[in-house]
Image 1 (cartoon, rainbow, N blue to C red):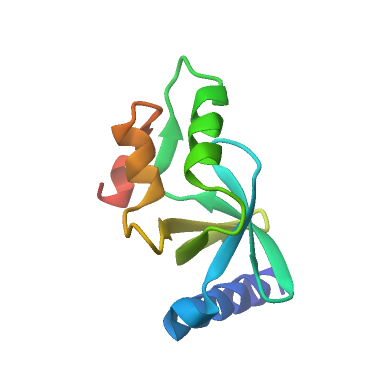
Image 2 (cartoon, helix red, strand yellow):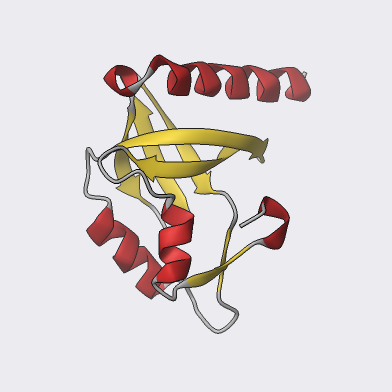
Amino acid sequence: MRSLLTRGLILVLTLMVAVGSAAAAEVLQVRSSTLLQIGDQNRSYGVELACYGLSVDEDGAAATRWLRSNLPRHTRVNLRPMGVEGGVLKARVQRLDQGTDLASDLVAAGYGRAIEECGT
C-alpha cells in the first residue's frame, strides 16, 4: 500500500511539473535548510532538497537564512521529483525566474556539500 501511495505521489508531482509554469508550485514556507513547504492550487506538501547535505560543522541556521532570503513566500518553483522518503518528497527545486538548482546554489554559497550519488 505504501509503495502504491509513493508511486501515486511521484506521478502526480511529475504531471504537475510537465504542465508548465502556469501550474507551477510556489513556496509557502522555508522550514529548514533542507525542507520546504510547497503548495499548488489547493494542496501543500513538504519537499526536501535532493542532492544536498549540510556541512559537518554546520547546524543549518545560516543555510536556512540564505534559503529564506532567496525564496520569499510565493516564489514560483519547478520540482523535479527524485523519490519519497518518510512521506516527504525529495526533489530538485528550481526557481522559475532563475532556472538554477537550489541545492547547487546552496553548495556554491558555501552552506553545504553535493551528495555524490546524485551526479552533481
